Length: 461
Image (cartoon, rainbow, N blue to C red; front, side):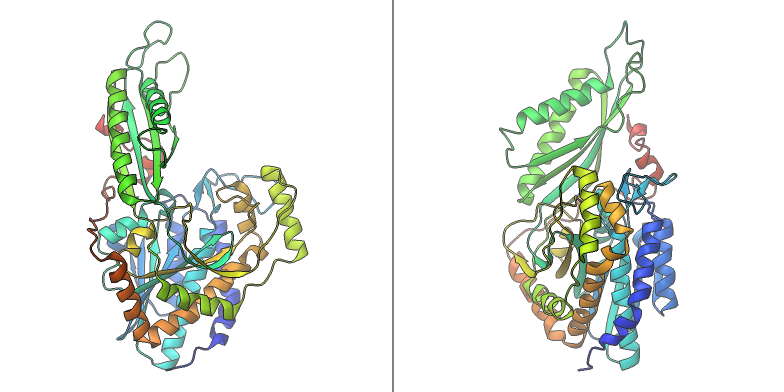
């Protein structure tokens, strides 16, 4: 078995960090990550990968492959940013003019770090002549729970033996812990505009407000364990015009996929009843649904071994001082506390949802986490600011190196991939796993501008 060459990754580390910064400087909305996807595609192409752009018909997805024979291992790249959370790399709230999004979930670090791990694997395979195929799948729109589910449904994960990835979290860990199942959908309501001083019927906003009240009231009874969060993207433009258009965007989560799915269907019926009561039309825009992550201890232990070998550099006192200022300005927290310990995270439930959960029920998937202090909230302007600071890359770079080393373990030992597959089959035995549920590409992926201006459902009313 060829020995892993750590120096190959070490020699590439500065370039990987530069790409993290480059992606951070060009944040893009989910499904509109044109520049970010091309940045990674060009990097991979220059390194000798065969790159397929617009993979599976998604304009900002890609697949990059190198090698032949043996195990086929995929590493996932994410690179979408979050709407409304642009910020300078500053300890204060300073949005950047002209930026519609910001990397408040550090996908800039995931995209570059995971791609850099794959690039280094390719260099090893080229130098050693060893069999094995390394694949990078560029996955758009994780933040709207869509990209990987659509790729899965369109055949993008076919032929893979195993998948590796990473994510920021509140501990340095190999994460073999289930996540929550989730579904996202938006409902659009169509009424009739009129002078609000006299005629107020057929008000689209009435339907939204009725639906929100009904969902909140019913939550304690038919679905007390289920998380249901919402935003109203359109609710009218002036108080003296009866709104003829309004929208309600929902995310439904639960530990149990079946409970989540039943609850979503129940809520959809409630929403349609509320539209009927308000005398307005309604259109359902189902985005996607995912099962929670299915743990795989075979891959989890392989990743843990390499993360412990690499180690995660601790934050310095200066780093912690900067993060304390960020936390204070964002939430009022007086200080931050870092926990640099590396752990194996198993048992219980992670309170988040990720769209690779659906893929993990078909292909063995292993994930590493790197730590930021708990007092730094994800999906906040301060996390965007943090992502632009050099020291924020320490954990992501450690995960990149550990993924590189674990990838070589899997490629050089086919028994590992076989064991991971056997574990997956054991965990899913006897379960009926329905096909992925997601919006058609022509409804969402091919019309991202209409999605982001909130009008994507208006032609159905």
